[in-house]
Image 1 (spheres, rainbow, N blue to C red):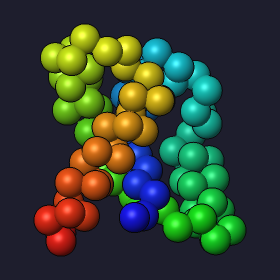
Image 2: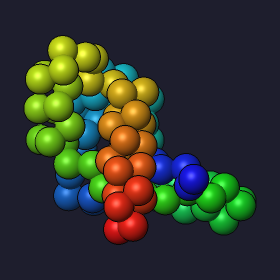
Image 3: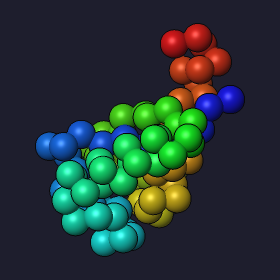
Image 4: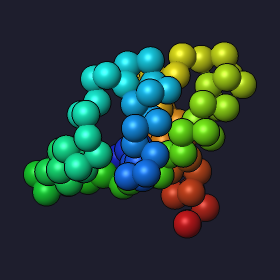
Length: 89
């Protein structure tokens, strides 16, 4: 199974950094984050981007009573990606 990873839209990146409890550990700019993410893909890591909306992720965390952090965002993206993968999407 592929390695699903959170992927952000340029226009939502600053909001994601703001809502994540550990968002300060993400690169300051979207361009820097995108460079790092693309570099990981080029180094042979088989990753499949899963778009994560800040609003949707925040509501998910609130509803599940879990911390809004990078680890849970990665699990959220992985779950969504695996569900789509199992349906052949």
